[in-house]
Length: 527
Image (tube, rainbow, N blue to C red; front, side, top):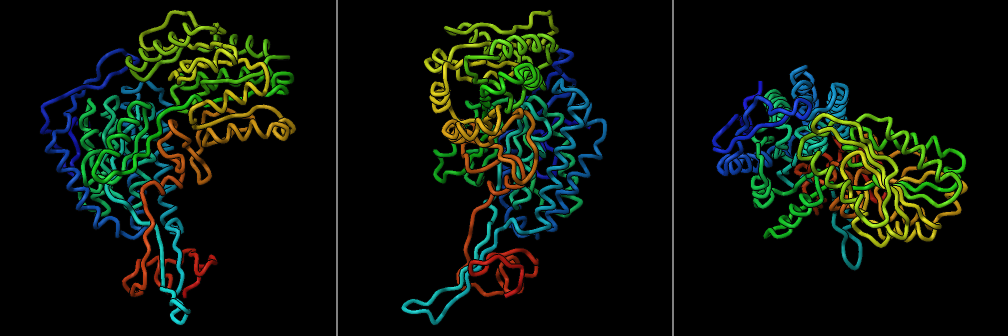
């Protein structure tokens, strides 16, 4: 049952005077629940609890943290239809998407649990002492990854489950040994509270410290700003707009002790279509990309918003087919009236830019909050000269750039901002002969795709969901997959430390049985 209150550790609380509601975009009506915005007193209490919990939680053995994560997954599944119905009421997304995203959420939790059970993720390294080395004896040095402390996670608008309360940021931070304070997204606060209740149930069931998790409601930016500025907070996870992410990053760097902000902020996900694809499969790729552009009403950070082509055989067929296929797609419901408003403004701004022309513009009447798909095209020269055309339009929109030759295409790629993904469509021979173009694209993205679509982010060890700024604030890390845990840890070395007082992962006997780098060689053996 939704109370509208905040979770300050394990306790429901409603001391704030500001209230708000969520919105059902399908019905175009407010939802029936009232939410209490967290007060400064509640925020301070949550942070203090997280700080106190951190000292204990970081020492909880990996297998116990794994059991905790699996219990969270079980408790989320136990929420049943109430979670699915609330998700749909607050997002307008269909039941299949809700169930799929729930599956991804619990799958991520269990993936990190498996990682903790294995134990190798701490990257234990041992260089044993050489006391008789001359002229200077060598000390005994042992290194592992250790949690950085309380983390603030901002829920995202377009993934009420997988990137929000118990999403990848929260799951990876809890796996690392860091308490989490979630700043719930105001568009799906009810979904967030239900998931928070599942996490708190798991905290109690697994005897974890009160404060290892809190969930704060807020309809404005002040709570988030105060959390980022709080001296006891040691890291931030954010998924959202460039404006929001860069503002938080700026705040973090203005602190007396700057902290990392891992923000995933936006991307147009450029797609390069080489000549062979236009000559041989123009209609196929046009149909494939019409589906990708409109998938989920274009409300994915990996939506293909920019398609780079070459003038020549097959381009007219590609554009004609893409336009026809787009117009066959029905208008899609967007997450919120405000998101719909920004989409309308965004594609209209693109349309009035000099040199653009319309390939497809859905004109059928729609209900409120439904987005009409749209495709524009522009010459490479006009695109290169106009930075306004480089912006992301969040929704079912894409811009096709007609480049006169490969040199112009490479120049355009070199001027693009950082992106989450870059796709090349063609054949292997073209890849071999266009290594410079591939290198240009590789320098701007976190994931290179060949003959596919960027929509769809596999949750696995080899996934990189990140990229050069402004796709993310730190391209060295991923927000998806097991490697996401490395955002919330730092290396620490123990020099000449007594064996019995070392973490188990560094003890001579290797009681955890993990793989360690010992004097330059990987081994699971005891010393």
